[in-house]
Length: 481
Length: 90
Image (cartoon, rainbow over all chains, first blue to last red; front, side, top):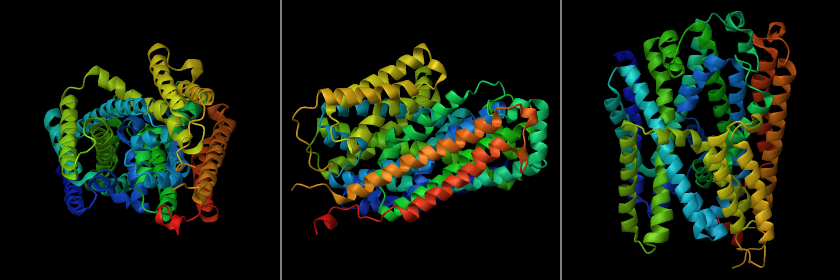
């Protein structure tokens, strides 16, 4: 046990906990439980808004998996990671004001609320709710496994106790505090992610004897490590470029991101968030992946990619600083899980329970159900994470692209194209999802592109074709344009 | 209560297009420098501040340039409009 490392981590947990308890007060005194619990009363200011976008987006893979791959691939992987820069501004600029205005007007609380009002179709509600629940459940489980493994390797606790400690701390503040707790803890977690990245990057450069020295070592080992094509030469420009669709542009279609663009306070907050968010995402993605590459020269010979980041941290930093830096991946994992948890729970309560099971539920009933549903989902994830089944791991790898294939065009066209209708939306969702699953199963990297490329392109044309051919007299809902 | 073409949507649409424009610029810089300067033999790379030139311009200078562009776009083009309903009916 490295106590000097563990103390900052514990301190971090205590602060996060405190925020949850404070947010719970707001939930108890608020006059609209649902607006408060699932959207934090639409009161987020610029900084918190930026941090919650960034923290939700930056996950275990940015801090653990990504640096590990960069360690083995070299600078080409940092280039690929920088395709994520638009995630900081593109989604906010495109969805931005329009989504916020429309969702306030129709009092939407979830992404599905918006789709329901826009397309007026039960099939869309069911399809969307199913994709959200299935994919995000899988993502949560995977994040949790990552978090438990991290605590396991730092503290020497066994996997199960590590998981339970981690899960209990996240569950409590999300269940009692709702979205406000999620956003506020995201702000703390996001800040720690940025600070941790910068400290570790500086520490690694110093330990490696300067950038020039590190580069020379890399070139001496394998010159391709410093090329954009990767150590094996297998990162082709086309393949790397299509990552822009998955991790930069398609982010608009991720429900956990879309729902955030409903919850900020005013236009000023949006402007500030776009700038802060881009700087934050740029720093983290650039820093963490570059650290992974540098680590190859500083601590050579690490076999397991996922251990690169913790090993480097313990190696190049004094214990107390290492504790602060290692809080960063924990923060990344917690902030992703908490966002998904509140989102899945809002899907179950608002989109399924209120739509199909009990439309006349009273405020008190909704409150009870929400706490209950959030708790159940949280516990179910813990149980699955204890011994993660094969299909969940597969689904998790899948979740990002799957959600984008399902939602991207329904959201974008729903906002910006008058002629978009429910037939177009349904068919593009089905085509996108089916094609994505088929390509993933049969032959990933069709024509050397990332799996998500074709489904997104094909569902785009499907949407337009079907909408145009079924565009009859259907009157337009007056609030959209 | 019929809302005729909400004026705020004009602003929102324009800003969404600016977002698309910025991404196109971002991609061009990123792609152009990376493969324009990085396609040759790695042993003959030029270095800037210790980094291979392609990497410095594509991933570092390009990112800073984008952040400046975004800041400028916010200052020059993005409008501070109300998101609430009440204001619009006044």
